[in-house]
Length: 79
Image (cartoon, rainbow, N blue to C red; front, side):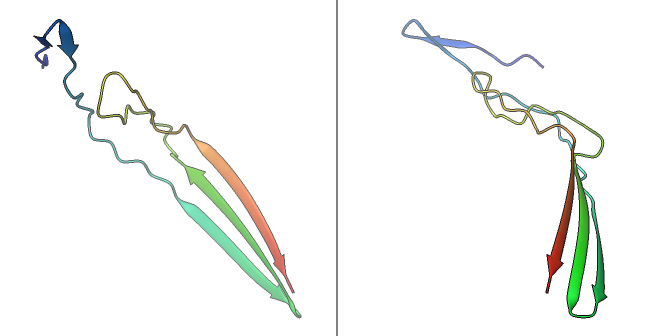
């Protein structure tokens, strides 16, 4: 589908872009164990698990893409 381009007063008017719909899947898992008065928590996050990089911007001029896949490990020790 071609978007029309308009020229008004020698200025080109750029129409809005249309991006295909996409669903990003970012699961996480948490494990917690308590030993005495200490609690250890471990967590893993996987952002954009299928590594789908998609144009997210509504205009042609200012492009913005979704973040690539990220794997994040986190550990916490509480007393």
